[in-house]
Length: 179
Figure 1 (cartoon, rainbow, N blue to C red):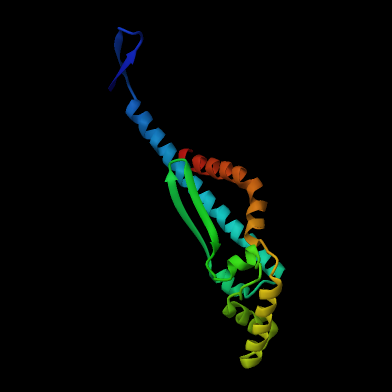
Figure 2: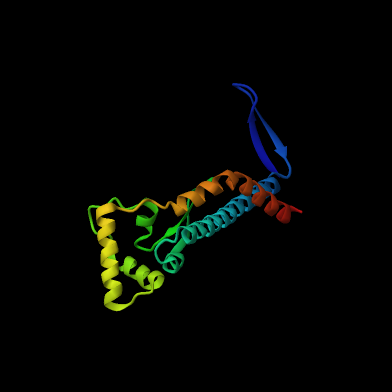
């Protein structure tokens, strides 16, 4: 049994005894923890959905070596507070940003991703591949390359469902936990 002090006026305080507060607090803590864990789990699932959709976009756009891109994908999670979670999805491959944002020209783009692409997509090897990759690099330097926002489009397509997926994920986990 816990004691609660309640102010019922400026100069009056009344002491009342309430049973079950400890149990109520424990249940609230369990509920909060379940919601937080469920939210994080659901956000990671949404992150995977975004990555999967972005990989479809990469394949459809015939971007540079997609296998390297897929292998460099990541999902990371960081918490800022109880009700704020950051889930980051992306690609660590060096050329991913240039594919996504485009290449404005003026400077030579990174050579190795272009050489890898020439070898895997064009089928050339050795000096032929290097020469062709160099020509592609020059063209990109002079003309640039339009953006292929494969990740941005994937996120945009998922945004309309995020709140719904969060609600459903939390609802399902609460039902499982408190049934």
